[in-house]
Image 1 (cartoon, rainbow, N blue to C red):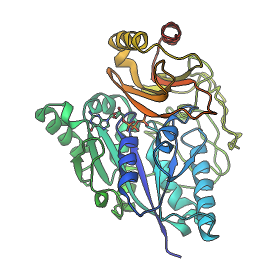
Image 2 (cartoon, protein in one colour; image 1 turned 90 degrees about the vertical axis):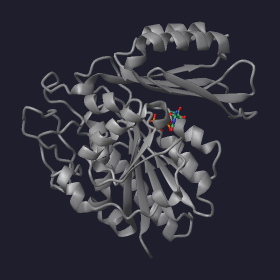
Image 3 (cartoon, rainbow, N blue to C red; image 1 turned 120 degrees about the horizontal axis):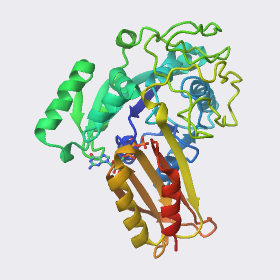
Image 4 (tube, rainbow, N blue to C red; image 1 turned 60 degrees about the vertical axis):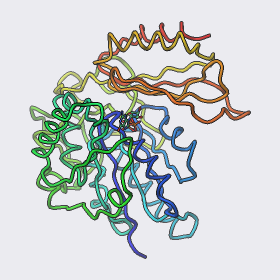
Length: 390
Ligand SMILES: Nc1nc2c(ncn2[C@@H]2O[C@H](COP(=O)(O)OP(=O)(O)OP(=O)(O)O)[C@@H](O)[C@H]2O)c(=O)[nH]1
């Protein structure tokens, strides 16, 4: 059986991954694509948005530590899929993996080479990175993951280019070219791009990967970390193949909800599929803080509908004050005055909403919102949202 091509879709929070994917799925007539979603936060809002208007196979992965658990989730998801395809239980021709905006694509890509079962069934076609023209400058300055996403790209698409001046766009392109000279770059408007530029790129060149990440194919041996200046102080599980390089910026604890406000220990909930006993900090206060240690998320839920005007007033005001810290927020809202779901999302001060599908008769109408940001004023947000309910 021939290898199943797989595409990794990455890009920082809000860079337009879902938009591109949605576009791709509606355009890929006659192609059967299995989509693997790995969403930040406990609520799979993206999956909800995608499922609503496509019949593609969507697989949701539970959240987990980006550096360890994800790969195990991904490994088992990929081998399950391949097995079902072999047995004729599932029919698909290719796989697209949408990573969370905070993920380092390295470990995701590694899975295709480090696991024999996966390597025998799949061919990693390309890593595609979305870059948000409006926010990329600040994101690249502040977040090593954003830089690594650019570094790993086989193809870069720049979204929201129409919102910046030609000069600013040229400066961004110049910067990206320096970071990753080999990836072709193109501005795409709301994900509008020819299928041939996204699929079957055969762009994943392992040698190039090794250049930007010398640890890319390091040991699969069980190992413990020796304390180093940059070390997190945790022990990896026996099947964790990830070795932290000297400039490692792997954030433990971003792929899941924090159990508390400050990250001196993980306090996170492992997904049901997580079998990593290894997420222990041996020296809870000893680990190094990286730039985005302060990135947190929380989920807000309500059953009472929102009053549209009050919600708009509140959100409009809050993004004026806290917008710079609000990396990403999105949700599916139960709004007074419509039988349809309202899909709401934003990045910093840019915010928008769309009407989604109708609520099904047997569906519990409730609003779910995820906020991801830096030192978010959770109490103020919750209080304001409560007051915007009918
Ligand atoms: N103006 C403009 N907005 C865009 C463009 N592409 C995407 N967007 C908007 O940007 C927002 C974020 O897009 P998504 O596709 O949800 O981004 P994402 O990368 O999937 O976000 P996360 O999954 O949260 O990381 C949405 O409101 C999109 O409509 C574009 O080319 N121009």
